[in-house]
Length: 334
Image (tube, rainbow, N blue to C red):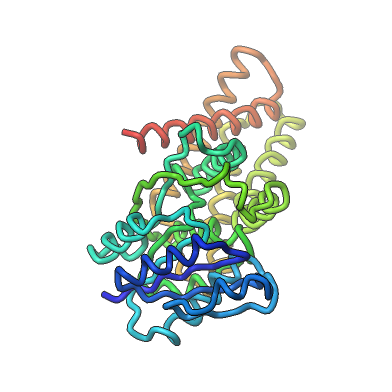
């Protein structure tokens, strides 16, 4: 199987040239996307054993990756699998080879999960990944220890839908995983060590701006789950005002029906109208259990504390999300 490595690069250094030389020794096809690095960086893109596409200006990592995906078969028609890797040296060739091995074993979608518990991992990276793990887990009922690693591999059969995924910058990679989950694609996970140089000082990631962009795209993709949660709270508030706890179970059942319609029907014919959609029995079962637990926690709060139904319901949502996250994490760790 012939594999092409796509490398998005913005203002790279000599580590990119070293990576390319090592990849060429392992007989990879290599496609580099110069994402508007500028004239002063052009010598780094010259005389490389790789195809190079130049963006006239910086457009963002997501656009660079999509440029590579759209053009990879034009440059290398024999490509069967694609691996994406960063240009900053954080992905050693040994790890890229491990991804290739999994692709050749028949796994058509491979992601790497970095080991982020090391004291060498920058604090902003630890915090960012912790939040990302939590929201991804709640959205997909799957715990993934790292969903932001740029080292991934997949069959060319996935290119068509990946080109349709929204996201121009760092938000693209997380959104790809969200969309893959909704299609029922089960990614093969490969654990790798997190590699940082000089406390990750050479990164182009802007902590505030890019983090906000990632979560804006995340909630845009999960918009119907957000709407369903808001509607549920409004339904509970109305029920609370009119009846108190009298129709607790009926209200929770009605809220789940709204959730199911929005997240399994409306979502299918809007966000996923052009992409395969397979939410699966697992997500449906999780949603049923989630609303059942909401009911039980609300009942417990009523009996023990006597707090209003609305307050109890919001607390139940928060506690259930935390419980779900840690239970899925324990299941994954074991």
